[in-house]
Length: 317
Ligand SMILES: NC(=O)c1ccc[n+]([C@@H]2O[C@H](COP(=O)([O-])OP(=O)(O)OC[C@H]3O[C@@H](n4cnc5c(N)ncnc54)[C@H](O)[C@@H]3O)[C@@H](O)[C@H]2O)c1
Image: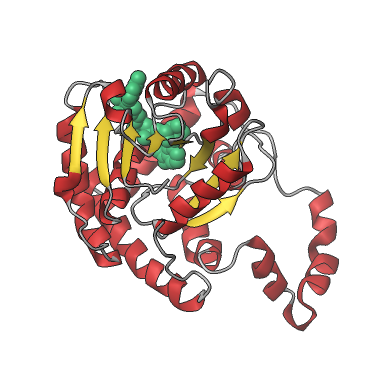
């Protein structure tokens, strides 16, 4: 079945990001969200992201006019070939919404969930057609960042994993197929480790939020945009590569440098982190920060494309 019409359920930060990416790729998109004022917020978010998706390149026929909105979930999904679910990260709510999608969608329509950490086997457990369900976890802003983790559950068919992979690749995304489902998938597991350590450092008064951010953005963060932890450490070993690196720094893993468990989120830590971030924003509003981040990412995106030639544009399904 050719995918022509897509539905987006839940138009918050991530849902709106998917909408912009899907419209830019020339799909007809139907969106749904029960919240008061959701349609206005969605259209504003799509308008704000449009210059960036234009900069990355629009597919033939792509247009913001191909976006419709309804508060009625059944109406939104009934004709869709692909449905992306993006409701808040609450397992019972997701289960309920996914069951509704499953009931009203065409039996062969694919369903992807943006969940950051819930396992697909749990989400598909009560569906009539669980074989067409995958977790498809993107990264904010979805209309710029190419990574999507596709995670099949125990009941997902191999054929549908392949269909989902082709669909996301067709939207110029880089699919990371997660073969073994785990909470947090792969990327968020890594990100959470950095996040836990960052909170410990602030909690112990070792550094401010701004200093922790600087430690990352002016060093490791810049390298990680090109190579991940493995190739980065391979290079850190000089001529001896990873062999030398493991010999030199391997013993430090036993010390260990990290705290591993998350610190308690006390009121004091909460205040430190929130006020630190507000001070760092230096008077910029959230939308100004957003704009600034997007301009940076578009330039970075071009660099990544240039230095990773295998990340070539994929053909649309
Ligand atoms: N924010 C991120 O950086 C990020 C990144 C990747 C994945 N995710 C995942 O994406 C999902 C959505 O996160 P978000 O940050 O966009 O949340 P959000 O709070 O910004 O948006 C959630 C939206 O869902 C709507 N909603 C609530 N109940 C609904 C229902 N019954 N039917 C349809 N819509 C409903 C809300 O009105 C809201 O607009 C979560 O599962 C989250 O884990 C978030």
